[in-house]
Length: 163
Image (cartoon, rainbow, N blue to C red; front, side, top):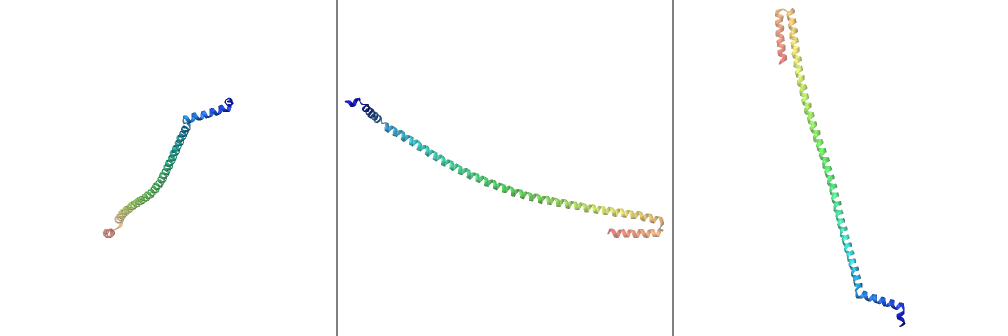
């Protein structure tokens, strides 16, 4: 029994004992189970990450679509506002033109009225001056018959002009 005193013998016994204990307590199954559980957890995490990535891509696509829609709506609003501003400016120009024309017509009517009044005043003043001049001339040097003839012809002349 020399081999009992050999170190290699005891190493072999310890090794086989260790293997027996490991097999007895089902360590390979427990290790395999732990590895399988870890692989399943990793697989679940990868699946969850893939699902989250797909959701993020869907959200990104939706937000990009909403941004494009908002941009096109903003462009439509701007275009509509420009058209409204142009229409309002045209209406304002037309209203201003109409107001200017009405005021011009009113001013022209006032001018014509003022001209007519001035002409009437000039005629009246001229008639008064002519009457005073005639009175002066008649009273200073005409005979009674000549005065009567001049007055009659003046009355006829004034009647003719007034008609």
